[in-house]
Length: 523
Image 1 (cartoon, rainbow, N blue to C red):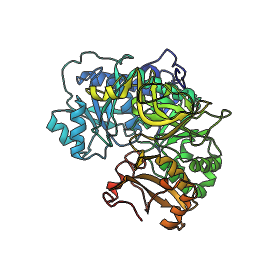
Image 2 (tube, one colour):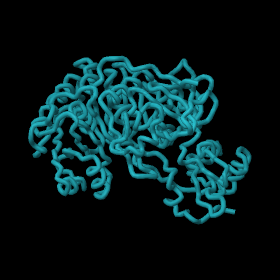
Image 3 (cartoon, rainbow, N blue to C red):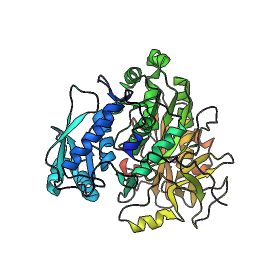
Image 4 (tube, rainbow, N blue to C red):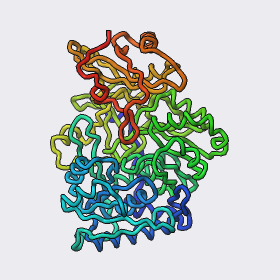
């Protein structure tokens, strides 16, 4: 058949960052931050033009890559927007070690590096070793949130092309997570990221009256596009937190008067633990919806969030190669199906077999996408491109199925599917059963190496505060809900499950990290 789901094509118009930010009314607030004066859209647009001139004078122009190593906050948001408007921005995790910066800066071939004045980041030493120009960012201490000046010796010379970028120019470059292989470079054009921002705006019916509380890291596609660019592209405002902090979340919710926020499931779970003691703030909150993405949201957590906030929870499905959003559960009155990642919400979405044939509704296969927001290919990696692209469709690496109503269920990451003696097991299916056990707050099922079966099923769980349960009790419960071969042979009860840089629970490599490699299955 043709395609299982086809998303609406993005409208023509502003397909550059600078153009998208023309949406906001001049006097409306664009960026805000805790305890800071707000920056209007007029101020933001003037700042973009000023920064473009400064970059050009330093020898940086359209298409030149500028790495950014800054803490979360309004200056990081503003730097992303300003650089992306006239060059190519490459945000990096400030927590990287020197050897990691050495890899990423070299791989990116960055022309300049932006760091905060006075910073002691190891990226500085790497930049000096690699001959990369360093530009120091000086926040305007008494000015509105997000304003800064750049100082330092740029790469020099006259850039090939200056001014604001055009739709086909590169705007953002990120690496894949590289969990099981060398990270791949994902270049995204102005059109890619603006199409994604507009898709999200349409999905969430964002308007100038909306206020987003951003708690996501701004070196990741989720925070950059879903929280920041989509909100501003709708003429709304972004309240820029210094990074996720469950202890400060409700104070920020009150100060920002947010109408929505977006986060990964572990952040939502941390927020839920503090919800009972913040009922007054929740009662006064103006949340129109809560969004979840970047990892599967357990249906139990979705239900708890809706109970806590009295607002619909919208689960979306995204990836770096798609400039974030691919599918999303719709807002009411349309149906939200817990356990699914919703319907096509931007790109065309289908399910494909290994031979490249598109499958009909209900069949399980690899999820594939195509559209204006999807990268045209990995950089300098013909092998990866040959494996990832089939007949114009990008293979996501995720396994799933689409129901008769067009809702996509992700049954697992292909690389995460557990192969127990030939029996294929979806870790997510086991996760959801374990999460139904009353004492379990978090669960991650993963492959445990086994000398005879190849792989065995194991799980790491965190218990609810004050709850008690044994490994045997949890396994016995799972046995009432799962076929015997799917029941974890080993359950580890932990205080905390290891997380990645964006707060996602780790699955691949977890056996190694927990020191279980080669131990086989529990009896």
